[in-house]
Length: 399
Image (cartoon, rainbow, N blue to C red; front, side):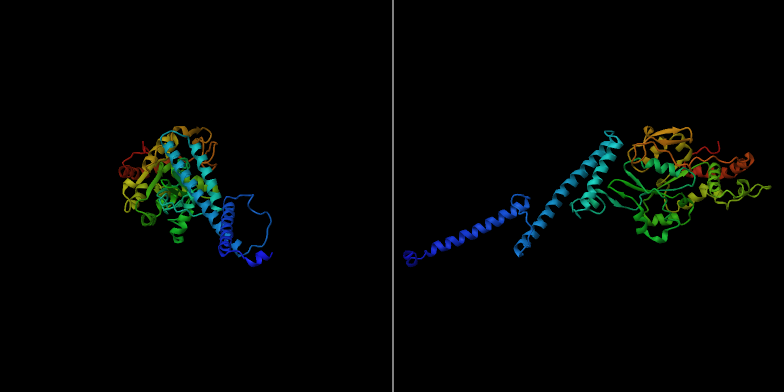
């Protein structure tokens, strides 16, 4: 004891001790942080206690680190998955895969997208995968204004065409008719865009509203949205179309006058009442003149409503060519339903079951007196001839 009191520890030993303790403390802290980062269960205490300022600091840094780590991993996975999906889509275009495989792949991707959204991840990729310049919603795409619109005509076969086109993996379409360019234009473009489905890069956004074709303001409004918009018109024998139009109205209003009384201003003279919408819509040449004031004929495709029934794959081939898409929809997608008298899809979009149009399609037409039908054919003939010349296609309604 006396010896220790007389000879204290040399200063060098004291400094060495202090340095060793500090080094040990730093190493221990770094190891503790490493264990937390790697989620080392053996290094993390199971007891909960109130964190001090040091622990709070480390906890904050750890949270930031883990969040960044998850973002990086999710980013790598999403980009790889996106490339995989695009590769598989390209394989479909070359006939390597079937549509159900792609649909399944897309659903898997969207399921993971929902998971990633819960992490509130916003990934900057450095490449323009979509029009926003980033992976919008991690692969779900973005809402765009339509690049193609089915503008007419009512009771011509527009619903059938839309349902058939939705089988194509590169077409996304609104189911309901937006009626933006005729009834809801005051709602603005943002309202219209919000109605559209999300699309990936390379996919086409579409909608159909048959009344656009006969709306005088529609061409200028669509042109103001985009002068490059592609327009599709499904036309049908105007006499048959008028009777079908009347049949639809009759199913909703059974007490309306007869077809004959609505057709003529004067039955004795045989003067046709062109103010009746069912008659007016069928004067296709007159309405087309209005569209040609804004759009060249090269941007308008006319689909035969009759051939859409007799040869759906042939007409769909023309539409796919017009839209610049691979001919994926072919004969193998259709079968003819004898009961309805219409072609049906063997597999509808997002389903493995056959799909036919609803009960409202293919209604039985009322019997119209042959003389009335002939009067209507005579009335439409000069308009049909002009329409054939304008479109460069004979539809055979006067044969």
